[in-house]
Amino acid sequence: MDFAGADLTGADLSGASLVDANLSSASLERANLNRAVLTGANLSSANFDKASLIGANLVETFCDDCSFRKANLEGADLSKSTYRYARFHFANLDDANVSESEFFGADMTGTIYFGVLGDKP
Image (cartoon, rainbow, N blue to C red):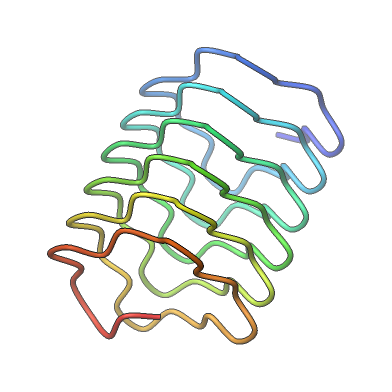
């Protein structure tokens, strides 16, 4: 699936299967991605500001230069992924799994980390 550059602002994608999708440079601001499966997706430069990704599966995703400002990633699985230069300003990562993920240069200002599995970014 190719959604590169798509405007999905406010979309309800809860429970959606977006395995290996190309969402690079897509706008998913305020989107509902609760329990969505994005395994292997290309999310580079995507905007997830204020999006809800509760319990979402982002395993093995490529999220360089993504924005997750004020996003809710509670209980999400972000393991084995890259988040180089991503912005997580005031995001909720409570009970998220970040095992084996790379956060080089990521901005974690104000991020909530309670119960994070794996090394905190």
